[in-house]
Length: 233
Image 1 (cartoon, rainbow, N blue to C red):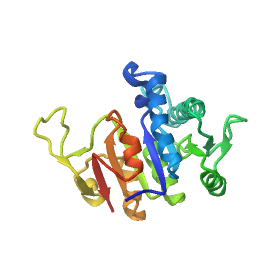
Image 2 (tube, rainbow, N blue to C red):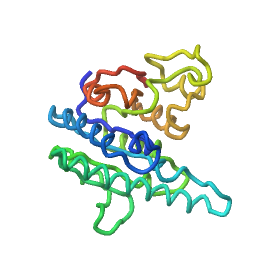
Image 3 (cartoon, rainbow, N blue to C red):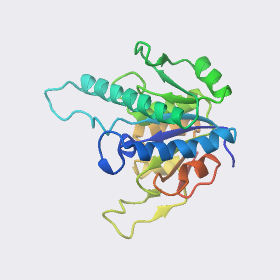
């Protein structure tokens, strides 16, 4: 099924490419190339990026959890500013919306503002998570997907789908072509965190998990061609 409006989740590590930290321009430019194909085909695209290429959460008990999460939120803002600029050099219009003020660097999120940008064919980056500690970017993307009435959440990962166990540890791990969100929660498969999973279940928001590094995987997923795992609701 072809999607009209999708939200794409990229990990911060994905932006880092082989370097594992910071930014890898070639990697981000390839993502931009694929997103542009979909935008030109009329798909409305929102993007959420994690902050793991800069910050992996609290690493010391000397740092309060709230402050650690705030650092993570700002890491996602940096990632979205960077990716947004790469997207612009590839010929797309972009906007960065945050749930808190960042001076003139971003705009405050509102559903009306985001909808206006989507209707104009602008790629919307939802940065800064939910704006609150104790919530991950997984929860952030589900919140925005539900609020923006997206057709689907696309999770571009370093793995090609959802497995019944970790394929790095278990060579016999079974990959699912489709799986229900209820089964994901019951088996604790950690496609997204538990809070995000329950939100998907309650609001009937489907997800698709696929390999970021497979050729044209993002462009294909945005057209409804998933070579990974579809999480049904």
